[in-house]
Length: 296
Image 1: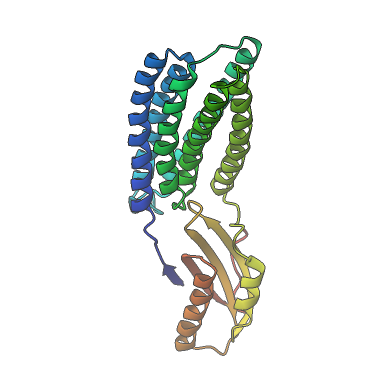
Image 2: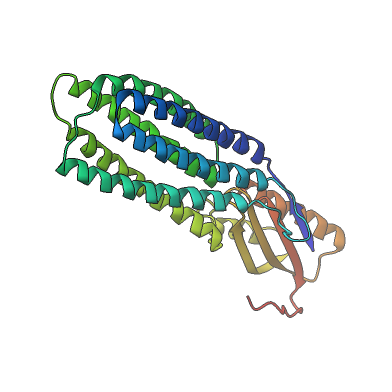
């Protein structure tokens, strides 16, 4: 049996990005609290409370992303990489609840418009776009599902503050308080669409779906073209966390291959899998007379 193990260190960057998002979100929530009291804006005070809740969810995501970098032990033979998916799931649920709450509040605002302090909203919105924008730019460089979930979380805040900025400018010249809830509803619907996509990707990993970025049929054909290979079976391909892919395969060989040729063949199969972004490969060689006992 042949094994190929290739581990990629995504955890350090991912953890640092989420840590940055956590502290920036907490810092800005405090600014929002002060700004909301200063501008006498219930909307901003509500968002400050929302951001304090966000900080808790970001803290959990940070912890789980950090935990995902832990190697294998007697409890988790593949290591803790999937714990980052729990962070993605948790923060998506928080976003889902928050978006539903925002839509509910917006409907009430449409029915009963409340004129806010436009000038105070304007200056606070600029700060909100800058602070949250920095976090989004950092997180966009990440590749884990957890980082994408946090990035979506911060993008929600950026778009929200852009909406506040636009509304505040308009309302300095025109008395249209209904613009604020209408823009917020549009942003919330966009966020809900992305939450669906993120949760779908997370569940696909949990359910061990074959990674969609890998052309499995082409890979199998390339392996079959190698010398001395009669057939393939019992092939399983899945991903630990959306990045680290794992494959097991049974390879039937003809009877005219010695151990040295098997070693060479093992490296050829490994190279093909590496090109396909499969980082952990387990290969079992069988002869044509051998009866495989695996029925899965």
